[in-house]
Length: 254
Image (tube, rainbow, N blue to C red; front, side):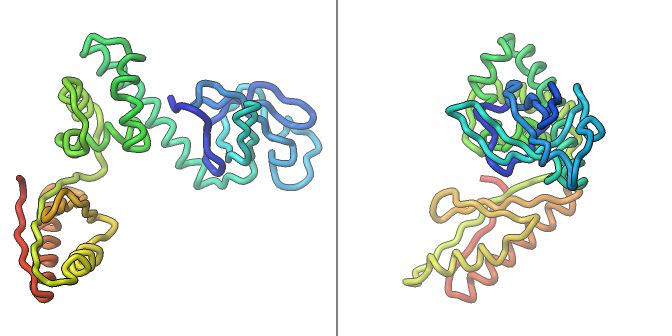
C-alpha cells in the first residue's frame, strides 16, 4: 500500500464506486481507498450518450492522474488518456504488488511481528528505495546481498531474502563487482567520469562507493553471461583509463 497521494501523471488502479450523469467516483486501490473522480469528458474520446456504456460500478480501471488537491482531498482522473499498452503494464504491476503484499505478510509471520509494524520498520523504506515492494523482492531474489549493499540493516534481511528466493523467479540475474581507479592527472576526475559514463548501458550501471572504488552492476539472462559482461566491462574501463594515464584494478568481491 502506498502512502500519501499519487503524483500528477501517475497511472493508478481504481475501483468504480458510483456513477453519475456527469462522471464517476472511484476509490484508489493502491492509496488506502482514497476517492478520485473521472469527469464524463475524461471517460472516453468523443461524445458520450450513456456513460454506463463505458464504465460500470465495481469495475477496476486504470486511470491517469490529472490533478491532486491534498488540502481538499480531491483527485481528478482520466480514463481516455491511458492507452492499451499502459493499461496492460499497469495491471501487471498491480498484480505483482498484490503478490508482494502477500509475501510481505509471510515475512512478518516468520519474524513473529505485526505486518503494520514491519511496514513501519522496513517495508515503506523498501518501497521508497526500490519503487515498489515487488521490486525489492525481485532485487533480493536476483542478488541476496543487495539489501546490505544498499545500506539496509536488521535481522529481517535474511528472512526477506529467503522469502524472495522461494517465491520470485527473476527475469534476469544481477551481479556486481568493484573497480579501483587511480590517477595523478590534474583532470583525473574528468577522466574517471568519462570512462565510467561510456561503459554504462541498459544492462550496466556504475555507482560511486568511495574513492578510488566504484561498483559495477550488470544484469543478464543467466550467470555465465553476467559474469562475462562484468569482466568485459571492467577490462574495457581499465584499458581506456590507462590510455588516459591512469591505473585500474578489478575485484569481483571486496
